[in-house]
Image 1 (cartoon, rainbow, N blue to C red):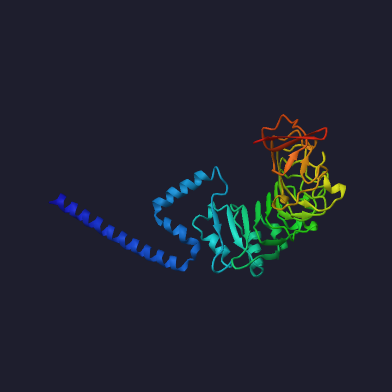
Image 2: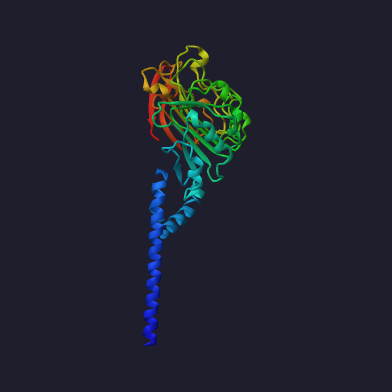
Length: 353
């Protein structure tokens, strides 16, 4: 009897505990529902993982994945309330310690609030910031305030239809990667002087309408991707304008509208860095019937003599040919066409990648 009574009492205690747990769960569910009603859409995904077991699995996955990829979580901070709640969204985010990249929609009205947060309040684990065009806007233009110099981010990406005005002394010293998708308003004076930044290793500029002169680019660059405006009447690249530290170079060259002799030959031996490993060159002219002028007519031809011997990966656009046999035995990967000129006779050979 005592054993049975004890057994029954234990069951009653367990039932009471279960009831209490159920009540607590109900209270938690009510709290969760209230929280769901108060929070915006930024939390929809994360409310699915209220189950502690699922959260544990997910966190273990994130910790493991974090060893292989720095940008494991991207949170989009565009909400119905604009960017006024940017700080609250990050600080209250369930996975805030894992966030590496944030996307921000910036307009002129909230630019001070946004860059104030980026400059002084951004958590150290957030290393990349993507500036987006707000919905409902065809394009936006604004000037980045000087306070941005105090930011600790390592990567800044300015997306399409976001036109910024920025001075070299405003970029943060911690910045290692800068990608600008629309550089129409990026003037010559804004780029000139970038060499003062000893930390910038990767630079991508799309739609650039000025020529690159010696001293304009940082001497620490290892990756450089330049897409010039479709039509230009100046030489896009001057001799010694590309830093010798560049090992990966991607160029989208413009249509040269000038018939000046100095504009007809875009490359000489002194233009390309001698430590170059990967070289990819394309023509903006491929979208029209006009091709870049050269001494061979309306085709763009590179002389093999100007290619550094250090190149191991060479990729040429279909409208670009090499005017002589490749003498570089170090090239392991090649895509393009070779044109051989001998005694006014034209022979052609195409070697796939």
